[in-house]
Length: 479
Image (cartoon, rainbow, N blue to C red; front, side):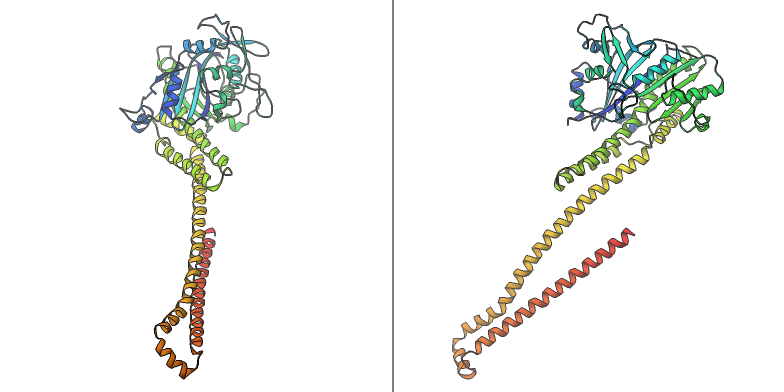
């Protein structure tokens, strides 16, 4: 099989989030100062609310921005990696493999920034070869943008050559085009040192049905040409859930780590639909669908990471503030970024629905939603418990002060009454003896003490019954 390299292409998506807290407009403004151009998202058959979400009308607040960098501007960025560069914008890149060198071009770069600082940088590359092995090996190796093979990643980043500049992976160029945001200000949202390829391969030549199935399996999971594969029969079924047959021998492939389009002997020529119009649709509408699905996944992953990172950090008042922000971010994402349908046309909608299934967006959304709600409710419950405890302490103080006041109230009334009736006291002294008033004060004190004790018993029993009712209700709800 030969690759129609004039229409085939591959895009590599680097998803990340800006750590520095800035508004969406501030980030875009700083990127424009570095040579990026603001563009509009392809609208096509987008539903109105999705269209307005991506390309707001009038003075509406933007929720996403698309920035582009042309091939010439990308070459200028690459020149900064080598002060002795003199090859011009048409200079070829080279990937050095064990047994050969694969030349390639970087056609353009895109940067999509969504509200919430989740972003995706995309590099479009095209190997300058029509050998299928070169394309398969290029896709497999190029996605590792940095680092060596170890327990964190399976393969070392490839050695890249660009007019005398040698790089171990494409990360130096990524850092260059993402200035003024260095690596320390970005948090990777995908696998360690790995990008996600979105490949469109047009293959021409003779191939039988079993070999076609094996090749689809290899392309879908990004295996290189030299990998020895023995896939199970379930992976080779024509009705595999991670495949969609677009037309006869033309397929979309789906996986957690890559997106693909494979056309075996596509009909027509460069002026027809399959070889002329469809490659442009893959770049625009289908790639946009993939980006929207990835944004939903990585936004939810980032929120889930925030839950796990902040649960044990700080004290409870600080956590309550943090989880309040996380809850607000989830509600905003639900209202403005979580779509069940994005396009009208059947093929586009089917493609989007399959990505939702493959990325398990509904299950992920429910999981994150439950995490945020339960954690926030727990912190609110703890706050209410502390308020209740403080209220109970205050009530106990007030109760004891009230008891103290009641205890001395009745004797005080008796003493006040005796003080206002001095003449009557002298008559009672002669009749009842000189210390009769002491017995009256003592009796009033006993009555006051008994009253206070009865009130304390009633209040205590009332609280005990309330707590017993609450424990019974909690036990019932837990069952």
